Structures are given as structure tokens and as C-alpha cells.
Amino acid sequence: MHAFDGSPTETIRSFWAGALCWPMFFALGLITGVNEGPGEWLVEAVGFVVGWVGFALASQMMAKLAGRGAAWPRFIAAWNWSNIPQYAALVLLSAPGMLLPMGFAQVLALVAVGYAMWLEWFVTKQALGIPGASAVMFVLLDVAIGLFVQGVVGRMTM
Image (cartoon, rainbow, N blue to C red; front, side, top):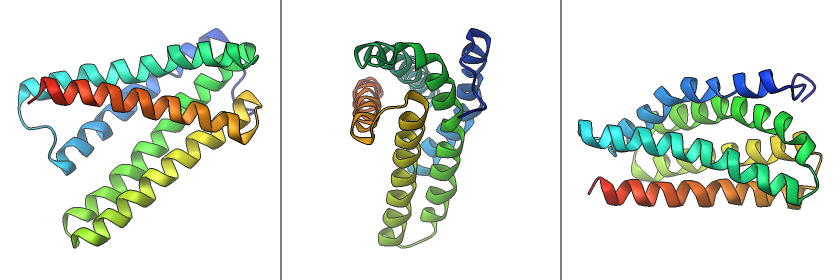
């Protein structure tokens, strides 16, 4: 976490991580068979951006409520960059699942999701300097926003 100083420039620059994750997000859609047509791709793209920025905004408010508002820029920079290994793990562990029996594929997917959630929890805990239980609330916020956005996206692409 010492690599992140929390400067406005660094925080803004960290949102480039989203651009690096975008291809992996769409690769996951191809692996899972979610994205099929151009209209669906557009809706998924908008959903990706809304989910990413939505968490950033909601987490800023949550950090302020937790008395850690000053640490939020450093946190969101670390959170943004930590999404790269999370997405990489999801793609790398989901892709072989296309060739494996369903049970093995599900175990690999579960491992990938578990790793992603653990990494997000760890980054949150360290960057905000909060207890583990409080960091869980940030992870749950991200999951809730993701589920909501994906629910809307799913409805729009039916």
C-alpha cells in the first residue's frame, strides 16, 4: 500500500485500471456465454462503467461515515489497480472450465471468486486502515452494487 500516496493525480490515473480490466470483463462474458449480440455488448459495457464508478462513489461516502474519508483516495487507487489481478484470476480459472466437467469448472470459478473477494478485502483493510469486519462491509457493498447493476443489465438484454 505504500506505493499509493493518495494524490489526486494518482487517484484519477488509477481509473485506467478499468480500461485494462475491460477486455477481461468481456472475455468472461464470452466464456460464460452472456454476451451474444452487439446490443448486449453495449449494455454490458455501460453496466461495467456504472458498476465501477458506482462503487467508487458509494465507497467514498462509506469511508467518510467510517471516519476514513481522508484515506479514500489512496484506497480507491489501490482498489482500482487490484481489480487487474482479480479479473485475471477470474479469466484464467474460468477459461479451463469450458473444457472440464461441470463440477471441476464450478470449483475453479469458486476459487477465482474467493480469491477476488479476499484480495478486495485485504486491499480495503490495508488502504483504509480499518478492522477486517469493517472491510467486509466494503466488499459486500461492491457485491451488492455489482448484483444490482448486473440484474438491470440482464433485464435489458433479455
